[in-house]
Image (cartoon, rainbow, N blue to C red):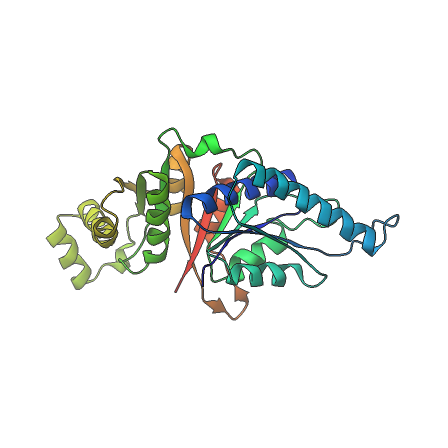
Length: 289
């Protein structure tokens, strides 16, 4: 089954920027575009009944789609205005059927805003598919000019495999460079053990050890995507701080998120959370086990 690129649209400037980003990515990947609006009746708008509000939404979504279709002739576009229900649940369901879900990173529409408020965060935390968050004003020009696909890497090769795969796939269709970033900090004294000291000694110290760890994680993706240029970035500091320090040169920031649920529900994680709120470029949050 061919999975579409799915965009959540609510008529705000942010969601329209997300729609444009999704359309361009669908064209690059040769995939269909699905546009969804999880409609919810707003009782606060007393002058408009359900049918009127639903008409506003339907026409607004279709107008946005007409604009996108005119700019991308030949792109297959499907439109769904989802009837009333839990908005986060509807968007999470749409994401499950998508190659990736694209949302605006801010916004509150006149009928129902859902993007990166509590609902948007819930969608990012709950879905098992990648979610890309796009800010208002994002334009195609930002995807050119030598900007990198920046991806955070941590732990061993398997810990960031999903994020690295997404970054390399995206770079391949854009002709971009992958900038792989690994942040490291000095471990507390009690964290040292004879085994870890032996590994550090063999590597020649902490920084060479971290460089080798990044190289090992990148090796299978370099082999799979030999045409994609790769820049390795090792820096001492917290992961969020180091990633934000290079975000200015990024056309897309890719971070991983554990897909497991905890006793208090699904969580996004501090690094992904920091990128969602502070990175100026689009951010892809990729779940992994």
